[in-house]
Length: 258
Picture 1 (cartoon, rainbow, N blue to C red):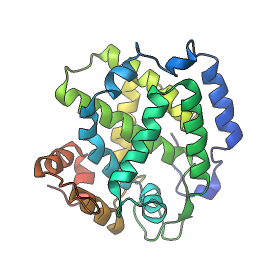
Picture 2: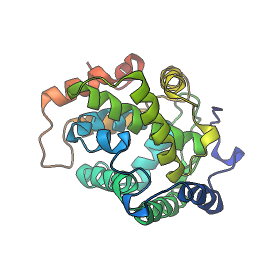
Picture 3: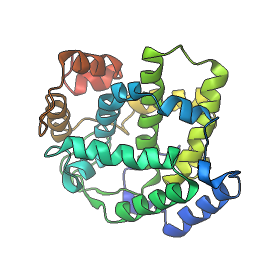
């Protein structure tokens, strides 16, 4: 997938793009009441487990490691002031897409896209390949791909932490279903790695590339989140340690985690 540090130099996901992708998904749905996957899917099997929240901290930090995503979260969300509400909002949207009826899933997709159309701004400091003052947009496809990837990869990691390890066939099946979920984020199929193995290569390559970089502000937000900032919930030391252990070594160091 191509990396471009200038949001204005590429085409963003439009409403028409999203609606065309949703129409293609709609044609493949056998039971609208069961949603886009249904109870026999591996997506339901994995995402119904509360163990997935073990990976929420990792997913959040990986997203903050993308300078555009970090700037958007800092400038357009209540992440520091009310992180629990922010996490609830994220998982409500994702779980509606996964477990809701097809009508509910498509409505969530359209609502998310509309929200993202208003999230634009500028990066406030130079980090990695992003110059201070460069513009970002939430509906930028590579940025959407990275956010999507952090959720999928962290879900599998957390699931396998407490459940039997998935077989290769199950990982490939889960990723194949996840690409359908990506469509609801507005991500076209051709923007994603074709299979689980290439997806893992993408995760590794991106984690080591200048597409990611932890700014001073992102580091501050990440460490405050792990300290329980803005919440009455005490973040246990073991959760902070687990999150740090699961981070790619380079990003763990950039966040200043042990």
